[in-house]
Image (cartoon, rainbow, N blue to C red):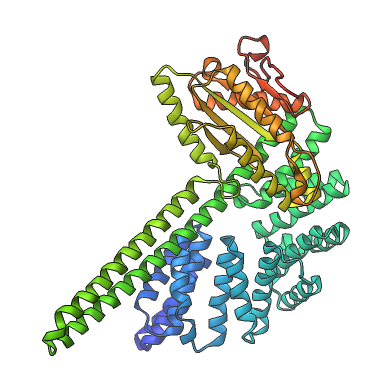
Length: 549
């Protein structure tokens, strides 16, 4: 690169731009300066005239931005680069950019788009290396989508292709997809053998996300096979990667495995610690997924708005052209100008309404749990803190009810995630019927919910919680396709016992929820601060009242 830099004075404009692309790649990859590399690639994208160079520069900005978690910028430049792909004359360069699109949309959880771009590469006679890359993206997308028609042999052929090209990261990511498919089909031993055989090669890649993915899947498989020692070992190896896999699903799987192992063998206090870490990792992952969804929606909204603006400009240009023509036809000029101005006005009003609708959709996405339709944890916190401030100012009582569905993981594992999602939707509907307009219901974790009750004392809150508990136990699950019982464990406190601080209310209600679980589940426990058991300690449960069972 340095020798070439010295010869640039004799290079053509195209050769200098090709060198600028290599230099941006060098900065971002070999010097690990992603921001600087992205900035150099962005500058090249804006100045390049050659479609091949411009296309590659846009893809490089998208890749660096995705790795740096700047997903909005990544999608913006990816969209701009993809508009050029029909002008790219070199098929290898074109396939590389489209494969980058599949990678970025896989990272963002937009698996339908990732599948679309991977198929576009594979349908265009790619070279062997690109057949491996696109094949692994296609396998990942189809497994994540839940396509039950996938033939495991087709994924194995992708693995063999990648191994022959020495693309070991792609090969083992494809193995991870194949293992998830085998687990879904209850072929646990086959999945275990596949990943254990690959593990030495996976470790040699020194790629943290891949190592964590393989070990976390193995920890789940070993737990289901009853090999607790191996399950713990794989989970520990995943967690040891620390910040390198922060907010990943692999970290959630590993902590869940350790929690389930501790629940069987360790003291309750140790199981509780691991459950808290599992819950924190799950929340981090959920927030990361939501951030990706939000980034995608923001860029989609921006793209739509830009298209609307272009369409409006085109309409305005049409009006101007017509006005020029109408100068020759004065008799018709006034009427035609009025018609087209009305069309422009109507279009402006229409697109303003569309923009407003999309803004409301973005706001709802940021505030609502999309599965159950109730508030998400962030929005529940904001609403509850505001309600507590108002209640304290007006001298009004408020109460907090928290509950967690009993054995919900068993429902998912036994009947599938579709049945679990059905249960969560029913729970949201039922709880809303027990809430007034002044109350606020939120989903604050996977199967954990909370209700802030305004103007309600402890006894009334306990009664409402008992009504909810009783109604949950009466859910007719046959509509889901299976027959099973749904129950919940409830914890209740009020401002009269815990004050007007939300974190303190949630802590006390959570202690009661945990106590309800400990006492046998399917019951309501009420916080009583005057009991000797409520003295500070490691989640020591205050005195409680079992309202229903």
